[in-house]
Amino acid sequence: MAFIEMVEMLDILKRADYDGKKAKIMVKVVKSLHMNFGVRRSKDQLRKRWSDLKIREHDQYRRLRRVLQKCK
Image (cartoon, rainbow, N blue to C red; front, top):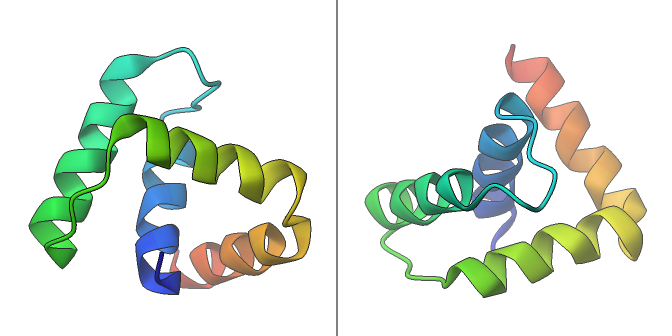
């Protein structure tokens, strides 16, 4: 997954206060990634990527958050 795609995903999930149980939010992420970048990812793939970012790849997660804070 490209960095800019992860930024888009993180932006949507943070705005909606995603906790892993709201399926409607993940549908928005899937549609947004397809419209903006032309990639098709399943909800399960994105859910796993979100979990990996928070738990295993915490440095990258912090870097993504910093990019989002600079944009706002």
